Amino acid sequence: QVRLVESGGGLVQPGGSLRLACLATRTIFTISPMGWYRQAPGKQQREFVAAFVDGGSPNYAGSVKGRFTISRDNEKSTVYLQMNSLRPEDTAVYYCNAPLPGAPRDKDYWGEGTLVTVSS
Image (tube, rainbow, N blue to C red; front, side, top):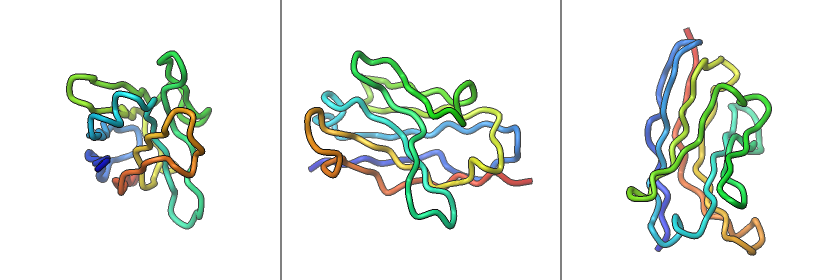
């Protein structure tokens, strides 16, 4: 059974930092590029934040580029999202995403999410 478990969310002031972690079942972690999405309050759709693309290079949404960093620890089957210079508009539930190579995107695995609130 595949599981993705996020942690690290919380309340932070504007300009602060948080690091999210996603612990994945090893079978999916070894084959999936892994990534992060978020869903802001009142919005129906999740938006792309960051992910590893083919070849292992990171890709970022324009709104977070230069502030967020995605990384992975292969020994721990964990993917991280380091978030710096946080802004109120970064407030959202952050979801870990694990697409299956070659499969339709509706087959992606998702975690249950972790809430990040940026507020003074």
